[in-house]
Image 1 (cartoon, rainbow, N blue to C red):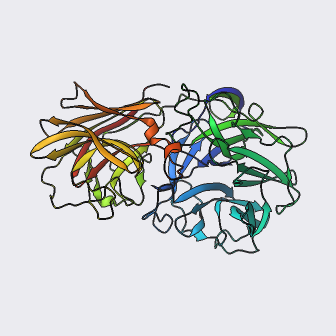
Image 2 (image 1 turned 60 degrees about the vertical axis):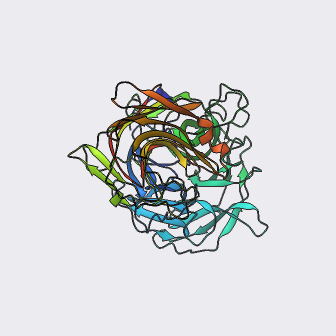
Image 3 (image 1 turned 90 degrees about the horizontal axis):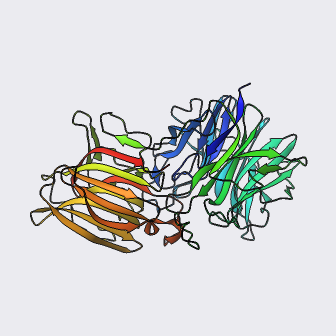
Length: 529
């Protein structure tokens, strides 16, 4: 049996936009997956030996049959995956709310390719699986004939998607709105139903019920919610919910959940976050009545301790660099919707990334030429060197369905939440002059807010410096002397301020529109830990 010791660790264990965690253990290896919504690839897979140091190793969904994202609205696409392991195979189930609903894929090699999807004929979101002897149960959140949210369950064949029983409502939750994110565990002959309730905002919470049968009837834990930060005066963590449980090889129990770190806690009364919902960890104990107790009586903290398994916790480095000397993109890169990879050329000989911009802009509900990484901390510094290729065709026009007609050639670096919320510093050429410009898009307002003439379109250095309240945008012609072009409030990219319900987080990425951009030495480093 592996060693365990009480160790201190920091939350979140996976920072930046990584919501709806689901975890499973195989031997002394832990694996975890998260939601991805409209971003590609779908459903990242992380691996850890000690529950704190996580490595991104793969994605479950890559091809169009598994992951159809064309024209997906912001925060559409892939919702709430669940990962489990049974008889030598991994199974992942999730919902594409924009295309065909619930799906299941499987693999025997979690580092390799996943199977073609099978589809489950049951409505709703947030699916889960329970392997129980010869039976496989499938549950998800849906609505009954009285339009009430509930957890519906049926038996299935996980390899074909065939339903082997009717879908039955097994729970309406424990009194909170939006019962969802269900997971079912069989422990000591009883079935435990873990739920997220209260909505995935500041009323979020986790509840527990149990029954003698997977179909119920379920009784509620007397100290529900077992996790909630609804009334926590310490505003460092909020919106905790959508959790999953796992036991380690030493018999110690753990809970992973989503939560947020509000960006404006120094200003009391403001509830805003822009990094997205992140993944947190808490130790769990079981009381004499057989109910779980999470963290400090249902609350977690940025610094915690517990009997962590495996190797000793190491300092977490969240810096990212890419000098484009490798042929493959890092797993940390994401694209919005299904990318056209012919527009992305890693010129390893020259150490540059070539982005072939099309008429699709960052403002369109389509696939722009954009690639980015999650912003993982508030205090960051992002850098890249940009060149604008002059002989790119002047015939490019913005697509007719764009809500903003911008005929400029634009290549640059930006902070991106979705098509309605993004800031960017970019290089363009107008009236025979090269310019660096700052533009911002908030709601239905898109404007260039600053510009400066530069001497050439070659090797312009861009820098974004972020803190909890704002981004500063800088440029340099020589890489030594930087001039500030302007700023943008992080509140403009905050989830709470979006005009449609949204569930993602901020990226830092490179883009090209109506032009070809050459990018060198992209980096994002954390300025504080």
